[in-house]
Length: 490
Ligand code: HEM
Image 1: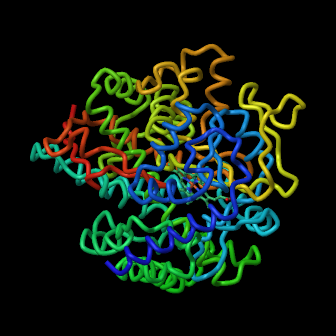
Image 2: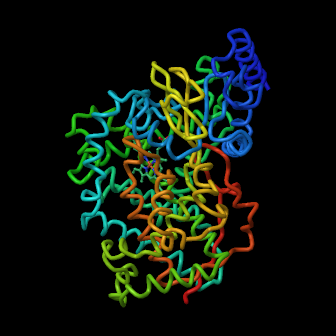
Image 3: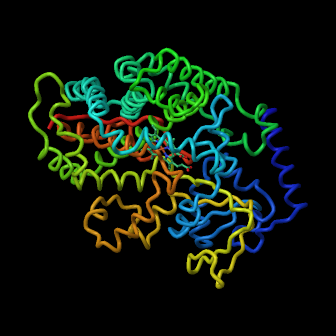
């Protein structure tokens, strides 16, 4: 109650301040109230409507909309180049992702802080670095452990919670990458430890985003359980890193060798452990759920994967799968994943950046920046963003955008394909785009192939369109925080 009262006062203070100072963005399209106050966008964020609210604004006002006196959203692919390829600094929103009070590559605001971190990380996660037999073996080994759950589901004709299972597999892979193959978690085989740690990661609050906006009030507003869970997972990561002893195959050792201090390495790793398990699990969950509802897509995927699979060696269930380089060539598998990441982007929300001090001119009609015809001036310091949620639903780029259609990535002509790729932002864009993308894609392809080379997936009775409603946050998940799927050997 007290927290709510303080929040309201804080918000009211912001309204007053904005009314007093007026808005430099008053000529930009958007609801009148947003010219004066941040409150409306903060309320929509608090009530978990931000992505859908911004989407509605774009449908109503066009590709440029004002979200507050200090923030705009743009929704045309040209803006990706201008904002993200040109690498505008990040906004203070990313302070939320500091760990141990220490900046990491994800949370770094300024280019000059980010660049040296990214250089080291690029070497860790490049396609060549993740295409090593060691990582492939590591993923196969985790799949062999997970095989038990799929088999049980089949034998008992019982639906299981795949969200928690995929989180376990992805966590066991990403922690092996961070701490060394012999020092990662074993959540797949230890459900008690899994539920304890993943439970801490899942403690949620609607006011999670408030820190950078109301720093002095955050400690009164954020629930104790939320703050404690952050401290718990931070400590858990630090302990894992120290316990591992920095073996040569660990990211931790490579970061230290790359000039990171121990706390900088820990801040980085804590971020990658979250980024690396939740996003991957969310994508896989929506993929299986969607395919359970669409057997025709499932049949095509099964046929493609089974055509390149071989007999099992009798020891390891994953031995049926070909080498990753062969999975990586399968067009329908790639298209199903691309379509999953388009429609169910695990990070569907705005990726906020800051307009450089000189400001920019923008013309929504031509989607051009800096031309003489430009109609709107956006001053330096204004927060500007594109959200994949909207970009991925643009009917002029993705006809019938709500339809899950893998063929759009296979059958479109080269010009259309080029347009679609330019509008695809599931991993972000520019130099700040997801550094873990190659690892994520290897995980996604292996796990998907492993499932569909042996099983048909069916919807569990507990799982409905409502339970799978995508929570509207920076990163999403199903409303029920679970997804029940039955695996039938077929
Ligand atoms: C399906 C899986 C994944 C998705 C959809 C995803 C998505 C994204 C997106 C959208 C961004 C940019 C966010 C922004 O600018 O606001 C990002 C950045 C990042 N991601 Fe991922 N990610 C995935 C997996 C991973 C994995 C497996 C790792 C590491 C193990 C990882 C580590 C990072 C890091 C470190 C950044 C910041 C990069 C930088 O600023 O240089 N992600 N990711």
